[in-house]
Image (cartoon, rainbow, N blue to C red; front, side, top):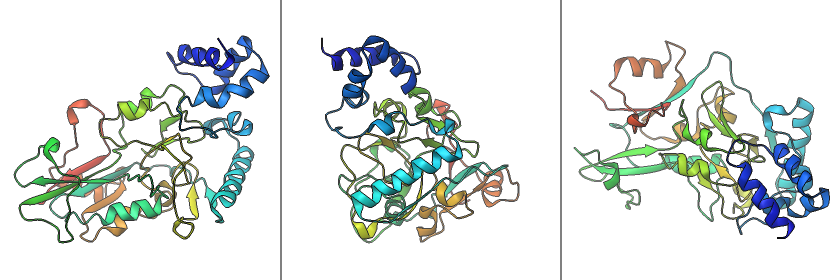
Length: 320
């Protein structure tokens, strides 16, 4: 058995309980040695054939986001900015806005107003530097028959420039930012967690691409980068957040973050600003005077798959 096989076996054993890369390294070093780990680390962390250059030695030893000091973050952000400039030829700025004390973000969506235009999808792709090829979209818009609410019979690939179509209504879905997120529980290396403002985030440099979280999510809200993201130079959004819309490398999971690089600075999510009908509402549920608080007090709001007890922070409602 060669070093790669031995290290893979070790990782499989350790994935039976939550681990981090240091725990893994400790066992790997006891098994072999520094040279063996250096040679096999990328393959061990990414057994997928799509991954060949995910980790440099520096990235492999990078601390978890929660463990980084401000100085550590400065170094990591500078490295990401340099790598982006080298790969895409664009100057970007990576920021790290923190949760606002006393704020718990929720989304409300008026299904009576949504017209299925998918402008929200386009805005999300542009704002969050989503890959155009292979295509990744955080928001899917489902077309349903009026009078029916069978999501399994919905059409997410409807066509036509003239919407809404007769006899149809539309239900956009994205990450629900659950208060009881099964995706977080499924992650074997604690690369994803829920922030104090309610947003579930991913440390892309810590993610090992195992896709357990994708399987655990009942909303199909997590997406895996099978290849290097393809984005034209002129289409890259240079205002990037470490935990949100920086360009993700291949081999990691990604998802909607309620545009935290915007919302933590007092702006609305890009999808809301693009909505032509005002169907989308966003705000702080802890503020009793906020629009979302008034909606949840006065409307018959509901969440998707309530029976799963994921406790979503994304609500739907109809006009009375």
